[in-house]
Image (cartoon, rainbow, N blue to C red; front, top):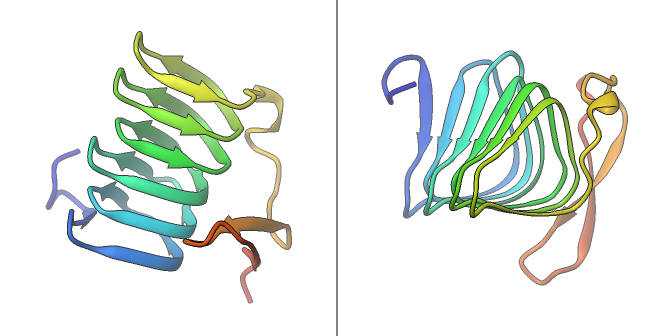
Length: 136
């Protein structure tokens, strides 16, 4: 999806820390540290994007760097320039030549409910922070 077609772009000079949630596609060129929860939407981490987060989305496309758990109801596509450090739980997984995955892949957990579950979130100092994804 191209920017402007019901998508949000996090620019290359932008750093976000915390929880991002929504129901439209998200394109990351900058840095995100926390939790990303996209209902029925696609997360794309572009080549310059850096994400340290727990990711929950319909589909995830990685061309940049992701550290943390990725959970997708649909497809996780790791393009040739992708570096992923963490577990991937997706109904479908595509890994291109040149992509790096350091973690486990398990399709059986792709659609497990997540409300109320706590996830470790990497901080810039490498400490583990606990953040809830439950919605009020």
